[in-house]
Amino acid sequence: MADSDSTGTASERPVALVTGASAGIGEQFARYLGAGGHDLVLVARDRARLEALAKDLDADHGARAEVLAADLTEPEELERVEDRVSSTEAPVDLLVNNAGFGTIGRFDRLPIDREVDEIELNVIAVLRLAH
Image (cartoon, rainbow, N blue to C red; front, top):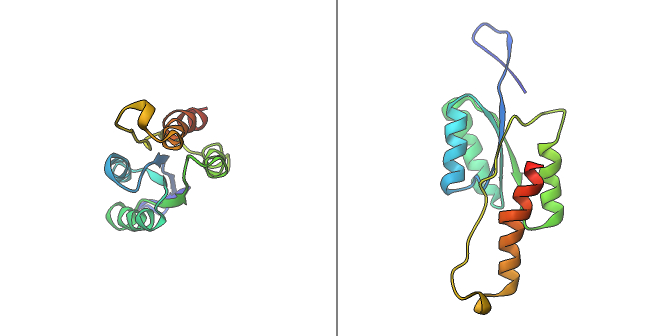
C-alpha cells in the first residue's frame, strides 16, 4: 500500500493484520499500530465494529484499514484470512494473533462443541496463520 507523504512522493506504510480486532486487547493493538504508522487488516466476526474502528483509524491517524469479517473457527473463513496473510499483492508485515477465548468449569460438564471451537481458535487458527 502506498501513501503520499507531505512531499507528494509515495511512501510505504507497513501493514499489520490483527485478529480479534473488534474489541478489547485486539482493538487496542489496532489503535496502537495505526497511531504508530501501520495500515491494518482488521479481522473479527463483527463487521459493524470493524468498520467503525476502520473509520476511527483513518480519521485519527490516516491509517488505511481493510475489514475482513471472519469466524476463525470456520474452516472456509479461516482460509480467507490465511489467503490474506500470504498475499503477495498487498503483503502483511506483522501478524497479531490475538483472537481467542477460554471456558471455565469442569471439563466433563462443558459442551464438547464449545471446547472444540476453543481449540480451533486458540490453537489451529494461530498455527495456520503463523505458518
